[in-house]
Image 1: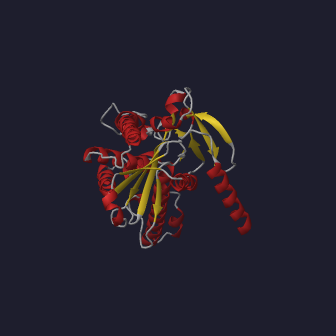
Image 2 (image 1 turned 90 degrees about the vertical axis):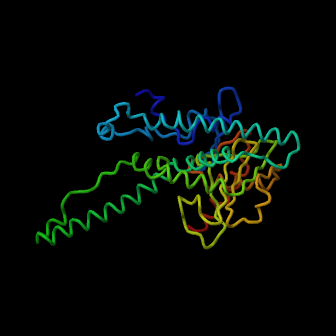
Image 3 (image 1 turned 45 degrees about the horizontal axis):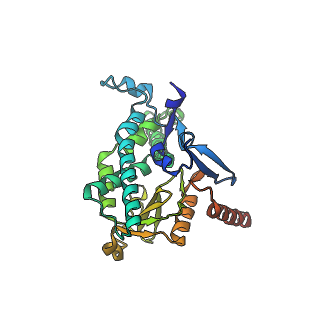
Length: 316
């Protein structure tokens, strides 16, 4: 397998390229843990080697002989990311035209809005932290079931040593993650329909100040009585946001909680300082390892790091 095919991007290059500042597809990067800043090509970030690689055991079980170890990675490249890229380009063009012409609304067709919602949901579901959450839950259930099985067998056969049988459950993390999230068409449809019905606001920064990160879809919960559904995306009171590019932030507001936004669905406004800083702080808080931007100005990230580092010192 070539080095190129080992690098499986969980945030697609077609998205990251919108934040580049030169012809070499470079972005400015801020490391959350150390505060280090440097430049990096988008092909060299937001990937894990063999993250979507299918196991030989799974491939050997398939009647369809066209299935191979890169089929899942190819699924993203051909069926997901090509459409995602087209939608990003469309939305970028709509926003630039709206800003140029002084528009206060971006009017998207129902189909376009649904397609965007679907891709945003898939982007969230394919993330490494979602896989970790699913695998941890599955491992907990499997270990508990195995322990109960061994205890029951020991009691039934009256052989105490059966409790210590060296058996367990093998988890195919790649397949489990895929089947529980982005390959679950019913779940993806539910998420897409929900997000489509929510209220969308677009914030435009002519100075290209919006950060993104290695976890670009952020979820902020405003309702105290909410409980997690569909990995937080359909919680009551959530605001789901994603920077489309350095100029454009899309925020999606839960229709059950933000009823006051019903009349402003599709609102397009020039981003004020608080919109920009709120997004950039949100990206900092939700990022796993690093932030990304076009300008190289990480002042919000630097201040946030200083604040949270000081808070950590005070509590230690």
